[in-house]
Amino acid sequence: MNETKEVVITVKALTVGYGEKVILEKLDFEVRRGEVFVILGGSGCGKSTLLKHMIGLYEPMAGEVWFGPDNLVTAQGEDRIRILRKFGVMYQSGALFGSLTVLENVTLPLDEFTDLPTQAKELIALAKLKLVAMETAASQMPADLSGGMQKRAAIARAMAMDPDVLFFDEHTTGLDPVMAAELDRTILRLREKLHITVVVVTHDMTSIRRIADRGIMIADKHIVAAGSIREMEQSGDARVINFFMRQEGH
Figure 1 (cartoon, helix red, strand yellow):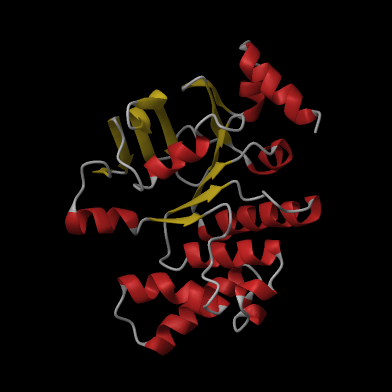
Figure 2: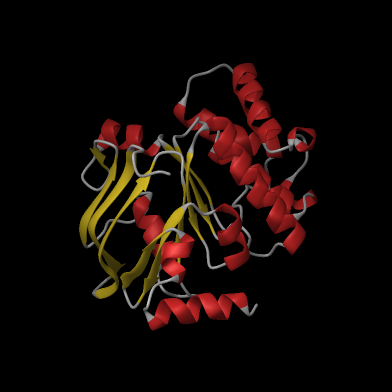
């Protein structure tokens, strides 16, 4: 389905780690416009580390991360800011600021990157909250929200700057199955309504089956499977088979 779609992210020969320790080595993959692309693997395999390098939080040991025609790894100054504005991120914890209301949390990127008047920023933030069915919680504090509501508010904040790409880091962690399913439906609705590209780091097989178009699986520092979930399941690699079987047993 996505074969002819434009490539929006290209990861080339990416090697990442901390200090001298290599976590992931020579990764190559592409993410296409409008798809939900999942990054799979067991705990501690480097999934979240890969995401942090893809969004520019850390500099890789080697390799490149391209958003369209722009290489985030080498970009500096205004060019780098322009690339960073192309995507939004929802972190595993939600990462809302506890001292700010939900509305104030969502307006933060607008405060940082725009010169819009306060009323305009609030209207945009309310529109984003409405997209995730959270507009009635605008004046509440994060501590007063359930885990699922906090994560939906964090999605609204990630969308504040109208990004082309949304990144999710273990979005279902800490949620019961009903709330996790609702969050997955929210992701699919946003993809459909806004025509955005979604990159999800997860090891939640139920969620993967609900939302994934394509993806990669990481083990032992490398990509050991790639393609649709069906294609990855048919891999003859024992690490891939064991991952899928173990997850199904949960």
